[in-house]
Image (cartoon, rainbow, N blue to C red; front, side):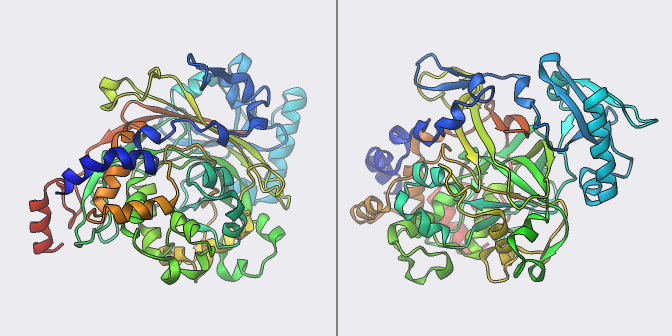
Amino acid sequence: MRRTAIHAGVGLLLCALGGGCAAPLVKPDAFDPAVLGETPLPGGRLQPAVDGEELVVEHSAEWMRLRPEHLTFVGYRTTEGERLYCLVLECVPEEDRLTLLPLGPEETSLSVLADPARRGELTAAWVRYAQDRALPEGVEPISIALREAMTERRLGPPIPDPQRVIAVAANFSSHLVHDLATDPDLIAAIAKTPPRLFLKYPLQPPPGTEIPSDLAFKGIIGPYDEIVYPEITWLPKDERGISASAPTALDYEVELGAVIARTLTWEDVCEASDEELFGAIAGYVLVSDVKARNPQVYERALSRNETPDRWARPYLTGDADTDLILGNWTPDTVAWWSYAASLGDFTAVGPYFVAHDGGAAMPSHALVCARSYGPSETRGYPIPGDRDANRLYLRQCSRATEDPGARDAMLWRIPQIVRAALDPEGALASTHEVTALQAGDVIALGTPGGITLTVKGRALIRVLNTLLFWWNARDWHDAFFGRSVSNYLHEGDALFLWGEGLGYQLLSIHGVAWPPPPGVVPEPDDPEAQDAAAAAGP
């Protein structure tokens, strides 16, 4: 009955829920026209695709241009495999040249910024080099071909691996409107609720399980490394208390990351001014927030018959449809989102770490994301439509800014997010292994619209739920993705992410098999196996 029902209703639901035939692969209305037209970047490197309806990103070292007014650092991988932190003295794409000033053997990009005297020395050295190519006595710069630094993966994360990477959900209006079908008039109400935060690092197992000792993933990767992902994603327990798996629907998100400069506790931030909290930001990095969508969709399916009246009240907007789209934000939700966003090499950081200038505002940054499709025989899924393999199709183009008058201004500013990350009453609090943010921790500030995931209004879902009353959560999950699973990231695909002044990332996609954790059913399409597992218990 279960699979028969899916096949009978799949066409209707694919069109109603935004999967398959109705899910747009490109959402040009989510692009910021002002950013699209900026030159030399990104406008100078965007070209129409053959069909004339899509834009293709030209791969060029020009995307590595610096913002000259800010100290910028990289993590340089030596031939011995060590990571040497360096100040960028110059980046000249047209001459294929990157010149670096290595820091001391025990110094990092964070430690030198935390020392006012050392920061002053580096600033002076940087200015002198820009003026007359002078260097401090006894210091030998590193000069490397820019293309070699990227193609040979010589640029790793520009900061030491953080203890935690925290991400913000639904922080851009373009994402809410174009990906989550949110009424624009209700965005102000969403902004009055607390920021919805989850973990991207350290690696989080499916709730109720433990990470195996032979885990294939590192979690934090460099800007030109492989995104390694599990080909199977585990789902929350269904109506019968059974956990199962599904082919991973891997989605892309480009984000600006704020790097914490010093230890912060709730006592430090709860009454601190916004200016004081901006003073606790060391700088900014480009972050890839790749994640598996399956647990998020499945959680919504499990809650399809619920009403928000008993949900976590601080996160409710008061509009039933909006609350159903955003979902119930509880520690359990955070746990599943954290697993979906972390259990793979999903968090690429860099190539540049740009120091904060000490001001009481976040500098705005244009953001771009493009993706390619690997050859069908490699990726295992057909390339959607008539698109070419290995071309970088534009998918996100916006500006990360806190300016309230901007087209796509972030709903929550950095001070609000920092307070929410440490709030002992927030949904993230249950994940805290320690009650502090540490120097080097990263907060990924949210993604603009244009991701693969597309949902429709909940009113229609409620109607269909009444008509298809015999469907369970897995039926809804499978109908939601349907054929549109080919639209997501798969083996052989690639991602291009760029942030203004932050450089760009070029990340290949590689899937690996990963055995199920204890208590998870390995064969989701075998009802008899599921029933036996349920009877046996986890």
